[in-house]
Image (cartoon, rainbow, N blue to C red; front, side, top):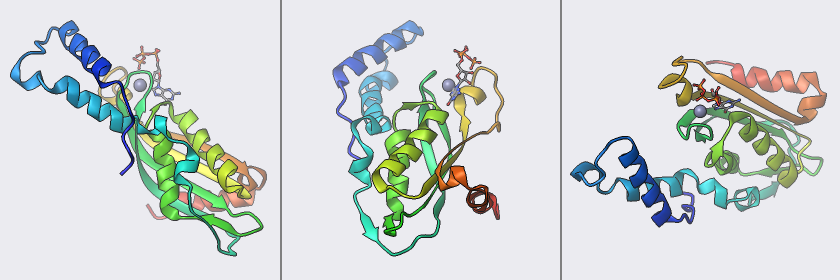
Length: 194
Ligand SMILES: Nc1nc2c(ncn2[C@@H]2O[C@H](COP(=O)(O)OP(=O)(O)OP(=O)(O)O)[C@@H](O)[C@H]2O)c(=O)[nH]1
Ligand SMILES: [Zn+2]
């Protein structure tokens, strides 16, 4: 598991207590007594990506003499919408074409990279391009594609209340941007057999 972020727990606890009072709750009733410290611990986990850089997780690079597309699809992703601080949840698909040296990374590292950017206050578009840019810069592949499909609780449990509405974002770099064929091949793999 990712190391939790070092947060100022005391400050979070005070703030959560204030919020409970502001909504008319009694922060000293039994069920809520430990809530401020629970929220502080939850935030340390939920926002752990703020304390991480892509180099921390893309640690393994192998020379595999493989220069065709590698794609990991359906990586479960939980993030926090930075506008309402409620979750958004879905799947990420991350693919790349290795560089001429055939350098590849461990498959799990792609999922870890997703978490580095998901575990922050986020908007889906930025998260999508951050993952693509990080993979480009650390692995120097010929191209990267990142597609994220997510449901935002701020659109389902409150506000406009449209359960089931999915937001799909994509970021393409290098070969995936330049070659329609490479992009179409990746999209067929991503959308195939559901
Ligand atoms: N582009 C984008 N918008 C997002 C994301 N997460 C939440 N939002 C939107 O952020 C917007 C914030 O709009 P505001 O009008 O400032 O806030 P609001 O009054 O709470 O808006 P409503 O959600 O429409 O009630 C809303 O339209 C949300 O749907 C995201 O990842 N990307
Ligand atoms: Zn939101």
